[in-house]
Amino acid sequence: MREDELASDRKQVVVEQVSHSFAGQMLAVDEMSFTVGAGEFVVIVGPSGCGKTTILNIIAGLMRQQTGEVIVDGQAPRAGRHDVAYMFAQDALLPWRKVIDNVLFGVEIQTGSRRPSREVRENAESLLSMVGLSGFGDAYPRQLSHGMRQRVALARTFLMPSPILLMDEPFGALDAHTKLMLEQGLLRLWDRDKRTVLFITHDLAEAICLADRVLICTARPGKIKSEIEIDLPRPRDINQLQHDPKYHELYQKIWEDMSLEMQM
Image (tube, rainbow, N blue to C red):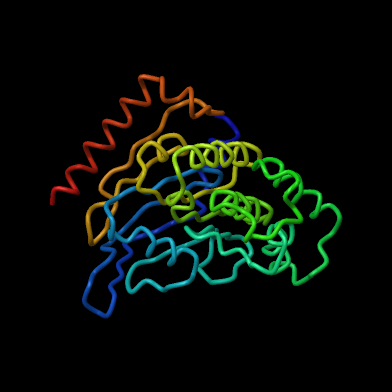
């Protein structure tokens, strides 16, 4: 058994029979259950309003479920934990800080120090280079395109040493070309240290290109109706993947499952 397979046997995120409603009336999540193994890249897809972001917020400790149990790295969720990093759909950059200082911000919060070590700063510069922003460290967010700002947010997320990454449609508002570049950049970063990732998207192609497993959510109230193993080799080149017959087979399978939910 490979080292990564052994790691994924340890369940780093466990969601068991979780339900949550808003205003005591609208049931958003209904007895949802799934696990994410250590070092596994899991993507959740499903119709709008099926509770995908709600479950991510519960795992992050930003909300508390009404019933069921959630365990994150052996503990109950709690906001502000250093072992969990959250990348939102919006970049949330601080406009008064330069790009390099925005990348460093998460580590500063975690360590309580406004003076990161030389090693941390060098890692931040390396990450900016990996996401195609070498030379932009002294720029301000207002000087960047939306896609470039998301690249800064991606570098900030990976600079934090958190072993668990939650990602809520971080590339959803980008144009197709920029989105493809960021997906490939994310794969390069993930291949480097194999963190545990739970990623939300509406884009089935994105799900297949990134994931080890895809979890398909029912229409609201959301629960996991099925899961599909993405048995495509890694490392992955997204441009090449789309010429692979297996890719199209997986796309069709997920689309058929999703279509049933969207008709209901």
